[in-house]
Length: 253
Image (cartoon, rainbow, N blue to C red; front, side, top):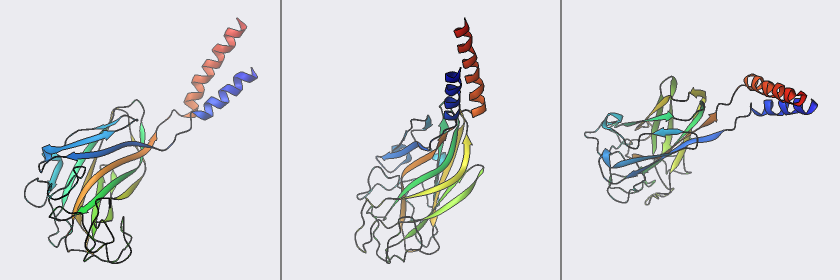
């Protein structure tokens, strides 16, 4: 009997444990200048999936057309809208992605990470020439090598969040580096995504008021972080109690 009670206690407390995890990671592969040349790749051990493409209804920009930049040396892994969001024209672009929880467990979303890289209209990695001093920018550099661009993340039912990213890819006034990808984290108060339901996020790139000399902003990755919801301890206890009673009856028999 004592062994049975110990088993119940240990299993009951174990069901209350939930560990933070990467729920999914999304990357891109672009082969041309149109939306239909972009493949969206989402990997997840938790069951989060997304569409493998970006439709015209999920993308917009203030400049004409829905074209992307693929000139110069822009890596194919960069989703690269043809809009100078860091210039005086106050240009913007927005793109939406829908993720569906195809797993059997509910999820609690705690944060979303966006990875951004800056480039020029000629297709080169953005250098820091003509930049400004760091003011807490994501990926900010010491010295006047910062070209801030605002990246806003919007989700239905959650407040919009904006982070200022450094569009410069290197603390260098003449040469940028494609390795200068900057990643910022948007944190949430563990909102619920139930099994079978979907979540749509919208990312908007726009001018930062501190800088207007020009910068293009590309997206290179999305990561959704959180927890899988486990049964409440009380619910698990009822099931374990029934198991213990069954074990006791078999012993007596």
